[in-house]
Length: 485
View 1: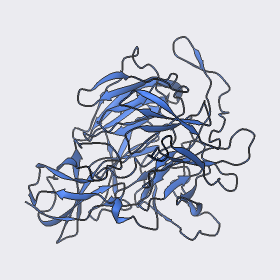
View 2 (view 1 turned 90 degrees about the horizontal axis):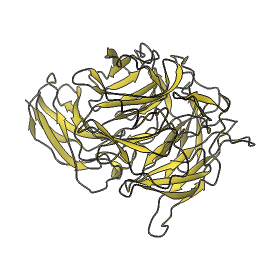
View 3 (view 1 turned 180 degrees about the vertical axis):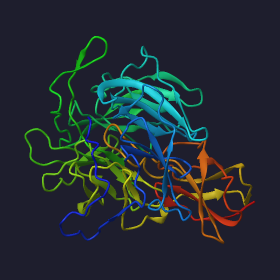
View 4 (view 1 turned 135 degrees about the vertical axis):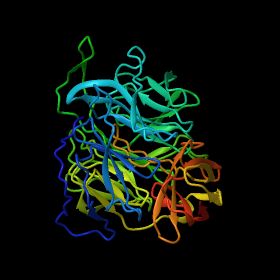
């Protein structure tokens, strides 16, 4: 559902005692000129943000030290005519383009539009790729993500159907989808290590399901043990949609959920009907000794806070950064939900390659703690010498990280499970990101499986002896030597 866009450009400290492990907030030197409803990390290290005008987009480029705090914004191409979506689905594709699909609103009105466009950063151009109305008529705030094979998958809002957009052919097709508990509205997906994805049911709460793409079917994933759904009370029980004015009765809202490095999923919720506190739950995927997997109740939100349509994201430390509906930030460390001494003010969350989290277009959250070295990408094959303006390949392991990253429970997922290539000049210390594309997989937690991606050496970068790294979800690999010619 629609949230207020009147967000503060300055993030404020909350007045309470800091926890033992406390992150800090630093305001951007140059805030986004039109704010940021949602921001997406592009494969060249820049950030694309949708402005509050809803048709306009802005690009944040870090400075030559790699600082996003001191980065600069530039307006880029606006969406095609007729498109002003809000509460939509979006993903960065394996080829480096950005897809923007549907919207529960268009130009501020309920529409459940299927309008879809793709942004090509090389051409600074959007292309309309809206599916046929007879194939996929209604999207709205539908769950979506990119399959390991690179196809963008999205759910039809009012039914149990799933559809895939193939970026290799720019075509849509329906996927087989058998055995779904309920319709797709207000639900979100979490990609698991085995390539299936987990969903917490909203209408059929407190149950959950997993979709297995290779079989085209849903399997039961059990009860979440505690109710994560909060009732939706904004709109009565009938929102008319479509040419026949059918009624949509919103099933409620939950919060975001994300995969952690240990393979578990942390899911957040709103305050359920008849209760006074909001819950969280932890999913353990199937294993040899636990073939069905199971849920365990997690810590409750303190002080009446909740995650009603609110985001989460993964931190390099493996902790989950949670934004309450109040704007208050928390960190989940696997056991505790620790209240931080800062508020995000209702902004979106995006994990940056610097290890910080971008809060909308105004500030970054700087967490404490570090990552386990075993979680880092590793480079196994990299060119020793490259030429500016040319394309090369780099290979290694865990290039896509251990999680998709950010999630809001339905719309505004800012997934970052793809490799970035960062080159630092030895003499000047200046940082350059080489645009990556055509990743061999979009899977997560790939372990020792070889992964490769192509990267374009920036034509304007400095030459000479340098270091090259692969970064995924804010965690860098060990660097390798490289000479830029």
